[in-house]
Length: 176
Image 1 (spheres, one colour):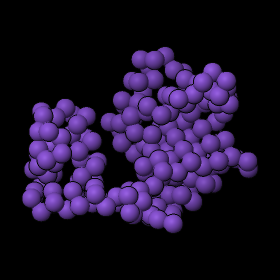
Image 2 (cartoon, rainbow, N blue to C red; image 1 turned 45 degrees about the vertical axis):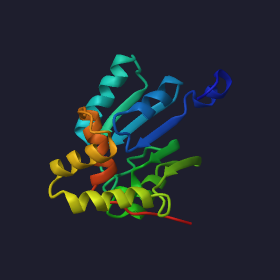
Image 3 (tube, rainbow, N blue to C red; image 1 turned 45 degrees about the horizontal axis):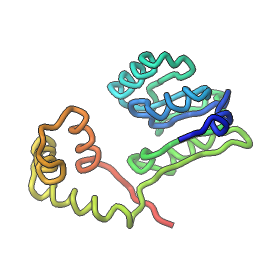
């Protein structure tokens, strides 16, 4: 994604990866020289993130369990705050955004990725179908796997992806 010259802008930048999940983005940014703090609520995701950093011997990344709804700045300021695919899952996305915006340096940037109301019509239709056909999480995962994952035997990663895509309990959609 980044050429040698373009990757230099990451050197020594302080970056917060809010909702880092299993740490791929955090490790990518740290690999190119940024000092990264990845935060997430999921302990199992953070464990995978820490293992990823360890496996690739990436030392300039730290993973911490934090709740964006309770997030405190604690005198930390970042050049970049990256938050993709997270805020729209919160009970109060605006509060999460305000909490994150307090961590940005004066000339820093926040990079957001939010679900759009119109672009998510297809996925919402699939979710409705699954909710009509299944009663509990396991049954819904089996139905989604059958309908949208070619009914192959799902790995744990597949099951997590299916749950995130089709069964996630809370989402808010945005549009301009």
